[in-house]
Length: 316
Image (spheres, rainbow, N blue to C red):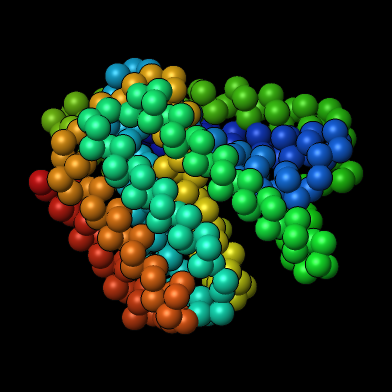
């Protein structure tokens, strides 16, 4: 039953996160907040809400391995699996995407995160540093987007945030918000408690469960988004989704969680998993800077690398 509870917690988290995004986006638009700002802030934070609740819950319950493992494992899965599987379905013309600046920002966040990890704990100081960098990056993205809009070159998808519905009734907005705010902590409770019990059942560190089961589960929305982007030949959406998600995972989720409760870093993460995450991020260089497209051979290689990584984590 513990696996059923873990799956149920994950489903509740994903549905509640989606409900919260829809409610928050439409409430913000009703209050007159520009759609552009909503797209770059509320949607980005809202789609990371499940991971955030898991990390906060795990930190408060004294299982930092699940909190940190979730983020590190998700970032690795986002590159190797979330880009690998869609590439097996259809070629993604990533060589045509303009993601260089976002990629550099993501790499800076990754290196900063690894540097802070070697302090041995993510405390309030590390949390403030991560959140300060996030604010600077968000501010830069908003300035760039406003400049594009003034130049008349703003893409249509930024004008219609995810979950936006101009005709949504007020009661429905309130319902989505309530469902999201109730469902997120409920789902996080179920998933974290179940994951901790699974770790005890199989006598493995909670970090391993965070790196595999929890990380893979919370990467499912990104995988679904990227698969649809590949089918629709929207390589920019796929690549941007992965880069943005990885940046938010490191800066926002761990930043907030570290302010709420300190999280000690498992030495195993310092020896292996952080470097795998960094290597996975560097794998994007040919697609970001060298004009390479994500073809089926690349998809096969990335997927195989992820399976190999999970195998090493589970048997170590």
